[in-house]
Image (cartoon, rainbow, N blue to C red):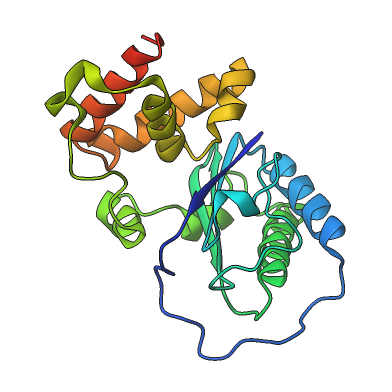
Length: 219
């Protein structure tokens, strides 16, 4: 399972009318351990974390530093599973760590439904499927890329710019993809899915990604 990060410029949903100040007693290491256990139980292949943080606030394993101070406490997890892309968003708590905890406990509660035997096809996750219309899910995050198209400047693009674009679209740090072949394969797949016109991207975005991959010798 790969944890990738995509920063938010703004919280894309209506703010919770009130937020609980201190909802859970679990420490941060327990919150992350329990969340990873639930994601493993869900057989998550990849997870995209979105928060109003920057990459310097993110640990190498993909989770935020415990000391991170986001501009908004909301947390969004996009989880790629055999059921489909599941989205879990929470900003009901004043502390972002507790919003992660709320998502973990939600996953635990959904998994518990299977114990009673009335769900055979993971029906309990249907309400969390990411919107099939890309505009419903992608647009609140703002444009995925700048309006300029790489084709306009052709071969003048540098390898570093290519890595930066691949990182922007995949949510994985460029240094991780350079060092880890599995992370590079995952990042390339995520970037292609994000940029493709059939899955919420555009022809210009996909051409730009293709140019980046060619610049890196990945085609």
